[in-house]
Every structure is written in C-alpha cells, then in structure tokens.
Length: 138
Length: 237
Image 1 (tube, rainbow over the protein chains, first blue to last red):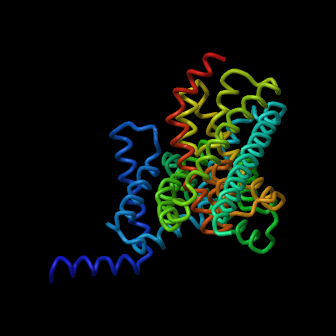
Image 2 (cartoon, each protein chain N blue to C red):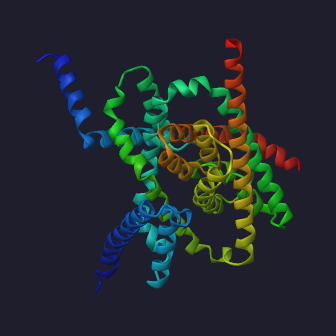
Image 3 (spheres, rainbow over the protein chains, first blue to last red):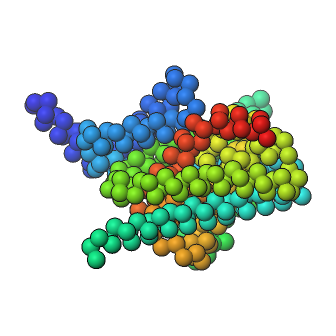
C-alpha cells in the first residue's frame, strides 16, 4: 500500500464518520488551547483553533467534508452550552432587586441600540451597494 | 459515611448534567411545537433549572462543578464556526466592508449606550466599567473588562445576560424591523448577542449563521486589541 492510498483511505473514513469528525474538531480546539496557554495570549483557544482550520480549509490542506458533519453537530445544539452559565445568577442575589432592575435596563437598552444600529448600518450599506453595482448596467 | 462527599460530587455531577440536558431537550421540543419567543430554550431551560436548584438547595458552586464540561464545549463550537465561514467565503469577500462598517458602528454604540445608560441610572465605578464589554463573547469580554478596570467575574454575568436576552430580543426585532438581507440579520445577532445570537442566527439560516459567527469573533478580537487605548481614554474622562 502506498502512502497515497493510505491517505485516501483515512480521508474516506473521516468523511463517513461523525465520531471522527467531532474528534477532529476537539483536536483543533485542544491544540488552540495549548497554544494560548504557552504564548499567554488574551484570546480564547477556540478562536485560534478556528483560525487554523480556516487557513487549512482555504489552502485546501483539509477538505471541508472532513469536518462538515462534526461542525454541524456542535453548532446545532450550541444553545445548550450557554444554559449552565445562566445559573451564575444564584451567586449574585444582590442583583435581584433595584440594582438588578437598573442593570437589566442597561443590558436591554444597550443591546437594542447595538442591534438596531448594526442591523440598519449593514442593511443600508448593503442596499446602497447593490443599488450602485446595478446602476452601470442600466 | 466518610465517603459521602466524594460520592456527592460524582452523583451531583451526573444528576445535574442529566437534568440540564433533559430540560434543554424538553425546552427545544416545546419550542419546535410552539415557536413563541417566550418559549425559546435559552429562556425556558435556565428558568426551570434555577427553580430546580432553589428547590433542591443547590448552590451555583455545587451546580457548576458538575456541569462545567457543558459550558467548555463552547470552545470546540467556536472551532466549528470555521466550516460555515469557509462555505460562505464568497459572500464575505464581496461584502467585507459592509460588515466592517456594521461591526464598527455596533461596537461604538455598545460602549456609548452602556456608559450613558449606567450614568443616567446612577451606576458608577467598577460596576459601570464592567458593563461596557458585555456584547462580546465571555473570554474577550473578561480580558477587556480587566484591562479597563472592571470586575471580570461581574462582566461574565452581564455577558450571559446580554446573550440570553439579546437572542430573544433579536428574534423579536427581526420580526418587526424592515431588515431583509441575511448579511444584516447575521451581523445584528453576532454583534449584539455574541455566541447565543450566533446560535439563534444558525437557526434562521446558514448565511445568517456564518455571518454572525464571523462578526462575533472579529468584534471580540477588535475590542481586545483596542482595550489598552480605551483604558487610556477612560482615564481621561
């Protein structure tokens, strides 16, 4: 068996197996975490792992089919990963009451403003651009 | 009897992990059956869990000790974003400056509104500073909070609140605002409500989801790089 045929076999195996793909995502996260720990970066390990995977995908060192199903598996139930963190509220009883109400106003008001501004900016720029891109054709 | 504490930790971890996942699955089914904003899993599951923890006299410390592994799955989930971003590379390359404009406008709005609202309501000092970076995902927000003189642990709580409330608000806003493009929907959720917003965006569509994932990461990186400058500016205020 040549090196090339072994590679093809491994690739076909990974393309078919969800478990191997999930493991691959974990491996990149683990490597990113180690890199962050070693270099003392103020960036989460997942972000480094993501950038590495993006570079590998863009340079065609790995095929998107080697990770697609594994990635979807993580993203589909991502909301679950936030749920336990919400219970931090149990430790901050001081936030229940007037102070919490004030903070709630800041969070709700601020987030509404951020979303409104971001959404409208992108939507207006996008429409302006597609309008101008279409103009020379007229 | 002597082995009870260890036993408790293991049993507690198994029990709370099972309860957390089960409640999430039930909440998800409910939402699939009746898609109302107040039935979103991100609203129903935490409320039910807090009620359960209070009823069983479990502290946050005991709860999170056994369920922290669920939260740490956000790490590999971030790695997974690479795939949808790669698949939407043509759209992103075409519209990168539109996204950059949205991210810049959103980041500035986030800081200014948090500062102004907190000041108006009489929230000052470290509390006000801890509220500034709440729109970013947790690790970025904690780094920025530390840099500008906030309390990172408090910021983490505000980040979660922003994500949970933001994902719910985003859904309501998208239903009422005249925002049509997938690009704007994704940017709104990613800049406003970080990972929770990105999860919501993936529920809406692949384009929306990949845009949200990209802007979330870029906004975080941008703010961490800018934090020392922001800290300098805040010292002048």
